[in-house]
Image 1 (cartoon, rainbow, N blue to C red):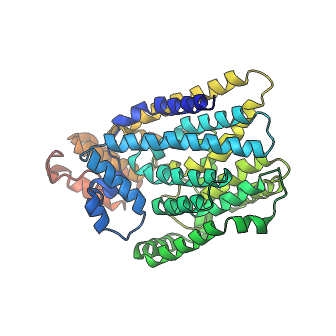
Image 2: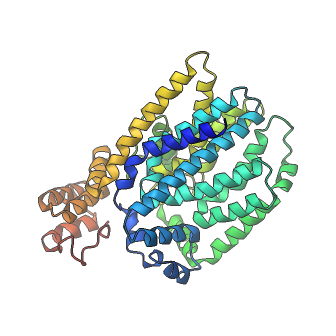
Image 3: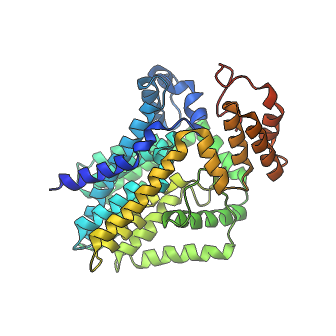
Length: 441
């Protein structure tokens, strides 16, 4: 019986992402994969080590080698990673709901995992090839959490945590997530000291990982760039707005967008974030299902949407792990509905699946993706510049010129759009070896 729900979840994920296999390389894919020789062969990858995100780069090298530089091998692995993550979410939620004493645990876990499988916000972590940094990290992350919850041999979860850090550094939240899971267990009193003792190896891995990151020049450069990017006040106001947008995308009241516009929120709105955090902590032992939704969400956005500034203040792919808590609560709510819970769950899943299928179509080409982006972000100069370059690579020079001019009207100081416009009549044929898709961004 346990196999059937798992197969249904995998089938739902594969059906929703059937269109993902035909997507092209996009945006950052060119910088981190297409034009990055270190991920074109296993030997080149090995020669580039030590470096940041070694397991992620290894996966790129394997996909590039398997698919001879085409996109299909990348998409196959990305979708497979997502299907595996859906299965892990299902298993974790079953365990958590049972520990909270939820009678409808199987149905609630299935519904929450189904919503995770089908939510359109996750296309950026699945269909966008560079989004693998999130989905690969999530695979090891969720496996580590499940191994800990299910009482696997003591070394298994910490070793998986080590793999997580080798995929993406935002995984530093994992020991805190384990503490949260401990606190949500109503079968026994929560004792912080005992929990920390059980997780000693995880904290040791975290400490070693932070030391290693500090030793790598690239991480130091990233930290210095982050600290110089914007002031504390500007960063705080911007990230309050980012959290609000994440909530809107999750509901979903706002559609996914590769390059969203983001306005700073009033600093007073930060009180709402602090209030949500306080409510989550207060409900840990009283109504842990609400605590899971609030605290899991805030915890997993903390590395990307808090104090450390990033060039892109908000990305939909940051919701991939963070969404699990709220989507679990949505699944629980429908599982406990007094009547029609199966029909309600099926209807919600259908709405999400239709949106995901439609969103996958935007990734079929650069022109399609950036056309969608400028519709949703009409004030973003970068989006118009990238649309112009996508047109330029297709030989559609008149449309490219219009897009570049629009980018400069929005931001007269946008140097790349100015350069692209000036060189528009001199660019080589996009099919020639001199053409470099993705470079002038």
